[in-house]
Length: 281
Length: 281
Image (cartoon, each protein chain N blue to C red):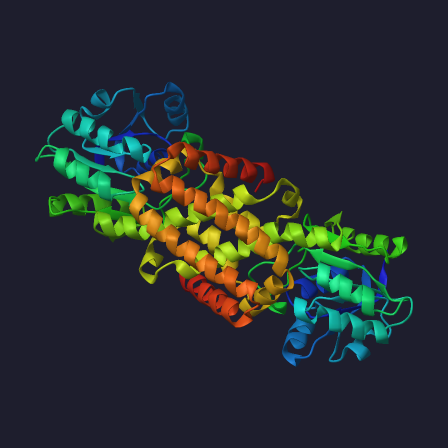
């Protein structure tokens, strides 16, 4: 298992904080430098031993790193990677943890210096919790991490980034940035839109009557609103396609319910049940 | 705490089976007679000690009962209550566990003999699991049970049915049958439609990329398709109103996403988050 000498993590929230914690706990990194603009999350990350050092600028934090992982909200990833690439050592690897990949990886392919060694990642390990207080050990165990190489990616770099996530016991899936975005529109972004619309449309007087079904179905609606707005906008095209498909199916359900068509309703529910059962718990 | 001498439960699935189990475990009933058309669930219920006796007809099972609880799928509740009321002793109390109340309670108010002592109940304790194998102890602890008295209900009978659920540590809410149906359309039926449509629209190739958000949001879609089709049809008017409101909000989200209106998206997500946070885990 590769041991990193100095890992710089930009953004020490749920993902970045848990990553630092695991790299240190598993003895996979000698030092983890947390980088952030605000002092409070860094202080908490140090206190919780998610990182060993803190830096308030990227240039300072990545200066001697052999790995940089950018775990900021999606709308800031590109700028952070570009800044890190300009300041880190030549042999340093760079990756990110962004929820959308197409636009980001495309922009970086264009704007990064040819020698920069960036490979995109997306660990599917988010939840409705956020910040360094939400970081937990073993967050990535059994989780899927999508790695998104392009024509520009060196095979050795791709392998090293895959091994990074595998060393945390994640399951790595390789996809092109566009395939990633098309599929997470269904697996992640549409669920979020569906859950949020459901929570938002629930009248106050119905709250005392919610039970397991409502609680499960709306859980992800408690996530950070600003963060997710940026994710939807960063994957607008694919998110709109998924949303249109969802609206169409709801319209079918509504029309079947209007005309009392039990067979049609049951057919849709059965398809849903089979999909849900095929995926597991 | 009232101790029942002989409780007859029609339908020994998740709800009926858990009810029998708790009444026996808590020594709140001397005998529990499970009634069902098929021998296999009754055999399993006896084996799991959810019931003490089994009967294959309602007339036989309720003959000496002091409480009858009908826990069948909604489309069979009215017929079962009518049959039980015709065969049980005069002092016997009757209730049900149906997910919709307006049409059912209205029909029973009209068709039951004037002396019959029925009070509607809806324990909000369902899940995607079903059958006697899904029955668990303490299913009702901390759960809400809606009791739906009408002008015809005797106050003493209403109190006795409330006490039944309270003796299992449930929280009782009294509502008119129509208010119940209007509110569960949002708290239960709409989540089910939303979750099922989401599971059904997810393409197979996106399955390897699902994570916590999709899993939570679609969990209830694994429930029994036939059972839920009947529930939606039994509450068609209110379910359609809730569904129309949901479709309208999704349309707003889609339009905001189309025009890149971050403020509008964030406003809806923030409203959703506040509602979710107000309800708890």
